[in-house]
Length: 264
Ligand code: PEP
Ligand code: MN
Image 1: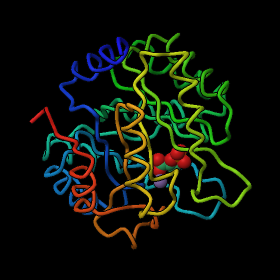
Image 2 (image 1 turned 30 degrees about the vertical axis):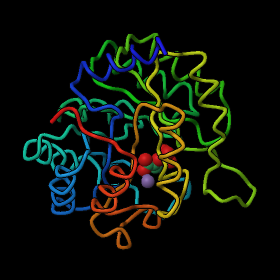
Image 3 (image 1 turned 120 degrees about the vertical axis):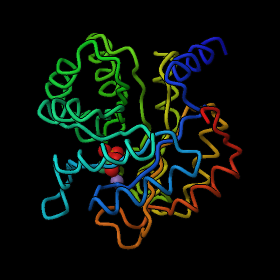
Image 4 (image 1 turned 180 degrees about the vertical axis):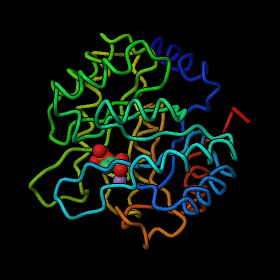
């Protein structure tokens, strides 16, 4: 439990609730959509709003994000609500733009964690930053690749580092879109006990009715946070429609989980 005290210190330094709740749409779509969600999230236990503006998709032909334009919308959401803002960065150009727009939390996506040279470039671009950097597990169940990415960020002097468990791809037909393989993040934590661990139930589940049970398991396992895809009109979302929940459902889930904000 000693290490958990450290984790709380890490979160407390940012005056964050514990566990940390990061919520928001898979993708920023329009300014109106981003602001709408931000204002609704502000009334929940959410500390930071997520929204993808650069979306590396496995296959071409899907929505790949609104691009840098979305940073202005996120910046406005932050100004109007006081929520921290989080987005995915997949190259150094993204890092520079996100830094210039006051993004608080940078996350590295599952399709980027698999690529050591890109990870290194992103780590170098963030060298010494006090921003929060969260590294998603690679798409495939490969602990070494995940560890390698974490090591590159630590070596670049990133102090406020954490990891996101978003499940692992599989050929088999399973209950979840991506298998949780709970042992892999536990193995990672055994190697880096001070590293905050956040669950992304949305990309594990692939469908909204499984979000609650995954969050409950994570809290039982002492995870430090949750990143949950949330949209005001989930069925109409431009990406990952089946797994997104409304801010109202998020409120019900966090109440059921007995998450309480401590950051007012
Ligand atoms: C996302 O967070 O919307 C996303 C695409 O996640 P992942 O990199 O885990 O697939
Ligand atoms: Mn998504």
